[in-house]
Structures are given as structure tokens and as C-alpha cells.
Amino acid sequence: MIAFIVNPVAGGGRAYRKIPEIRRIMKKKLIDYKIFITKYAGHGKILARKAALSGFKVVVAVGGDGTVLEVVNGIKGTPAALGVIPVGTGNDFARFFHIPKKIEKAIDVLIMGNVKVIDAALINGILTFGNIASTGIASETAALAVRFKKFFSGIWAYLVALLNVLFRYKPYSVKIKMDGKEIKKDITIFAAGVLSYYAGGIKLLPGADPHDGCLDVMIVGRVNKLKILVLLPLVIFGKHVHLKSLVETYRTKRVEIEADKEIPITVDGEILYSSKIEIKVEENAIKLCTL
Ligand SMILES: Nc1ncnc2c1ncn2[C@@H]1O[C@H](COP(=O)(O)OP(=O)(O)OP(=O)(O)O)[C@@H](O)[C@H]1O
Image (tube, rainbow, N blue to C red; front, side):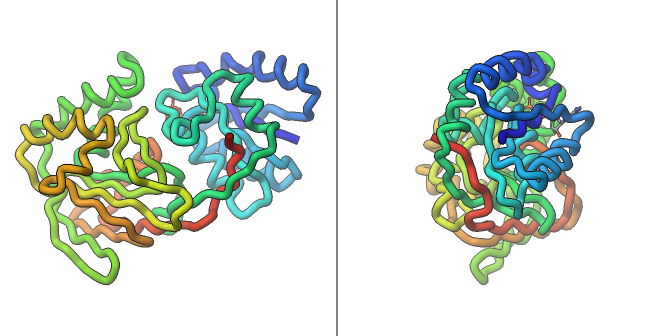
């Protein structure tokens, strides 16, 4: 039995509009299913948990990365597997695993029965996430991009927001603890995660591998703002990591950041504020229906 958790606002309402198509395809394929529609942000986690505990073998996030985040946290620790119908705006989680955007093909992935166990990450001991957590210019940009999403789609909303943030951004002074070492740093961009994509297709952590039991970490310290503009096209295609003089990369199981004030942290599209961030890998945390 398959449970679909539909976030009606994901993808600007696209997730909701796809319900009749999901019903038609499931009827044609003669598979038992139920559709649950979220009523508010956070409801997806509750619905997903209830579905998983009441025997649904697959619980499907019908939406974007925010919906996947809620379903992952809902089904964590239950026998249910995660499915995704990527009808959000960015869909970075589905992009990494090549989950098709066409509804019928995405449903085929669910019923094919191919389940892979993948790593996730835990932030501040409370939230499990499947993509990337970031702070610095990236999170300030994400916070602003929310407003631009009404006017621009996917990656464009982030690019316009970035140009707005870029010239007023002041690097955060932080302490970073990793692998028994502590470094003091002024950070422009910090990202840690288990998958590669960010903000609708930007390849922020190109080397991330959800099967290696590690987080990939990427840090850009204090840099001339014009250099950020040079870095930008490279980041989109994941080539920035070759610029060793600007970009530091690490692979670790746990990383901690301490700042002297609350800073924004973007976690799979959601924004948290904290002065202390602890991110650690959760090995084999998610069972995922994939190709
Ligand atoms: N019924 C609801 N009403 C309002 N917000 C909701 C509802 N259900 C879920 N949400 C919230 O909607 C937000 C956006 O969802 P989601 O991220 O899936 O879509 P998106 O932003 O279009 O896609 P992406 O994150 O891939 O760009 C999430 O933060 C989620 O918590």
C-alpha cells in the first residue's frame, strides 16, 4: 500500500493540481493507495508518521524538498520507504537520484520495488535532512529568494536574490570544529550535506555520496566580492571545488559551527536560526524507492 502526502502549495500549487493524475494512474495500475493532503507547514511529518505506523509500505512526498524533509522526519525509524513525486520548485533531492518529473514514470519508480538505503544528516540533534545545510551568503540568499519565487522560477529566484545579498553581506566570524581540530574563520559560504544540489540545481557539493557514511563540507572564507561573481558560474556546474585557493573541501562525520550571534541556516530549503550548529551524518537513515 502506498500513501501519498501531498503538499498543496508545493511548486506554486502544481502538487495539488496533479492529484487527479495520480488517482487515474493508480487506478489503472490496480494498486492500493491513499492520498493525504497537508493542511499546514509541518503537517506532512505528522501524516507521514501516521501512514508509516499504520502499515503503508511506501510513503511518498508529493512536492518539493520541503515536503521530502517533512516525510523523511515522519517515517524515520519506521519500516516504511520514502517515495518522491517531484512537483516542487527546486526538487534537488529527486534531481540527485534522477527520479522522473513525469508523474507516471515517478509512480513506476515506486512500484518497481527498488529500494536503496542512503545516508542522511542530523542538524542540532532535531532535524534529519537529505540534501544540504548551508549558512553564510547561501542562507541569506535562500531567505530572500522566498520573496522572489513569486516572480522567478527555480534557480532564477536564487540568482536575483544573490545579487541583492552579495554587496551588503558581511562574513560571519565563526569557530569550526571538525575531526578534533578547531579553526577560526570568517565565512562567506559554508555547506555540509550528503547530496550535491542546492537551490534548484546548483551543484554546491559535487562530490557528495549518500553511500559513503560521510558528510561533504565546503567552505569559502573571506573573499573579495568580485571573486564571488567569478565563482558563481563555476558553482552552478560544481566546478568551484577545483579552485583550491578559494574553496576548502572536507569529508567528515561531524562538524560544529559556533558563532557569536544567531545566524540563518538553510536546511533543504527550510530556514533555522541558531548560534551553534552541529551537523552529523546518519548512516543508512533513509530507505528510498529509486531507479
Ligand atoms: N498545507 C500547507 N500550507 C502551507 N505550507 C505548507 C503546507 N504543507 C506544507 N507546507 C510547507 O510548504 C513549504 C514548501 O514546500 P516544498 O519545499 O515541498 O515546495 P517548493 O518550495 O515548491 O519546492 P522546493 O523546496 O523543491 O523548491 C514547506 O516549507 C512545507 O513545510
